[in-house]
Amino acid sequence: MALRTKSHWFGVVLNSPQPQALGQFYHRLLGWKIFTDEPNWVTLAPSKDAGYNLACQLEEPYQRPVWPAEDGKPQMQLHLDLEVDDLDEAVAHAVTAGAELAEYQPQERVRVMLDPDGHPFCLYVG
Image 1 (tube, rainbow, N blue to C red):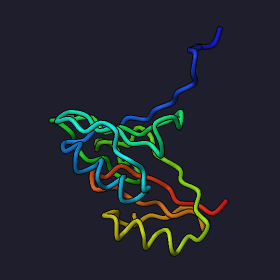
Image 2: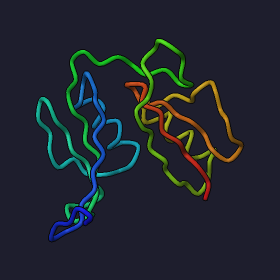
Image 3: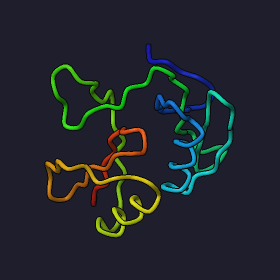
Image 4: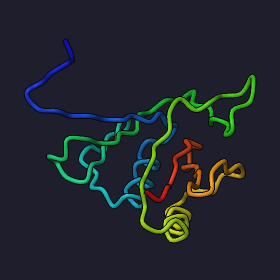
């Protein structure tokens, strides 16, 4: 039996040494509204009833992941995929919001970006 609730809700939580700063980054990047802003937790979503959200959770011993993965170094646990209309414009917007373009780019129609805490996310043209 699959997990069921009265409503379907999906959330992704990113660990961060500074959840408010990371939440502000994703607010600038996605244009989503911040619904929870506490010292240890920030939650964003496009709307209150969207059915999904992105949260940033305090992790004081946080170590920035390495992309691409290297033995003996912190590795990413997940990454976000964000479909965009124009890859160059999306990369420019992400950089303005505070992201950096990863040095390693494995695909032509995808750009791997790093958020301020080093979490990789991909911008791609569908």
